[in-house]
Image 1: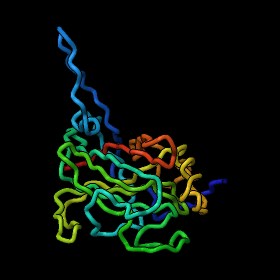
Image 2: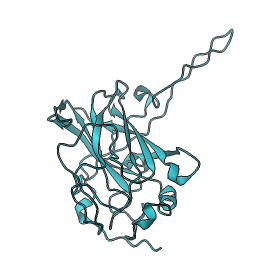
Image 3: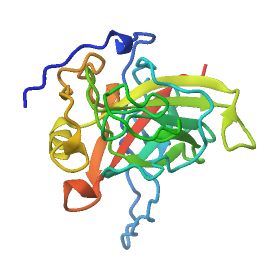
Image 4: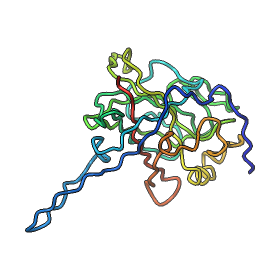
Length: 256
């Protein structure tokens, strides 16, 4: 298949801030006793935010498919078909590297057929639309880590495979399971390795999406900046493509 994109000007890059980012790598050395080595304690979260290479994450356009007032929940799948995707996103202050706890990390993206909830039909498919599938957010823990469960996104005309993300602080949780208020610190997008996406496009249900796919290199928003522009580090959850992936990234945000 020849991937010939149609550029979508509604999602052109927005240069709101000069940027670099980080995907977080530990730089601290473990102390070893002279008499006998001591094994390090198990780490349950990704590399601590305090050890992250903390610089500002690239801001990207919100795009046309954002909806206010989505649910606060760690699993946004709602039974949608697709390969599992576990997102582990660490939020840090870009100036100090300090983890930002209790920040709401919100995501939204299309399903395997390229349809967004609330806008089903825009990519040429007919399916039930409850306005909430593959949308939602979760609060970061004390280490600044947000864990979200979704499915590997599909694609729609003019854009590569991606996920939209926002970071909010000081939100108020509401009785209906949503949130209100707060301060928006970051709007960006998450991107996927093209080799993995090519393999994913060959398995069901992605293989039923007949819309011409725009590649990462052809995309009008992604600027080839790697992790500095939202490219996830993907780790396989199993032996096959359909088993899915864990996607990790550190989001450096301005707090002042």
